[in-house]
Length: 152
Image (cartoon, rainbow, N blue to C red; front, side, top):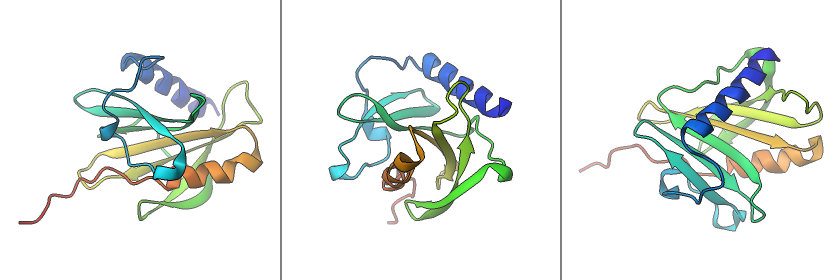
């Protein structure tokens, strides 16, 4: 539990370092592709080495977030494995996370490797177990950035 709280704190520090807040989105094209009927829009912040994206609902609340970089702060632990899933054709496992002071929140996170060696760290929070499955499905429906070189 302590490691999860630290991970979530690291993400908060990362968000602050990238200047994420109430500011408008910048270049959401660096974020994965969302299905047109998802009702979500991206908020993006990035540096030369990383991209931080938040999938926002129409009311401004976060559906899920992700961080794309060569290294991420999340290290999955087999004992925290929860649901299997598939994101853009890649089989993954979602891992349970715990949030300090929010014992009823269903938090999950996962990693997806990109062809160029970077890693996508995805996280989400559902208010209760009934809201978890649709949120996982929504996160799994995105298409990751293509990193394959086109053939000539």
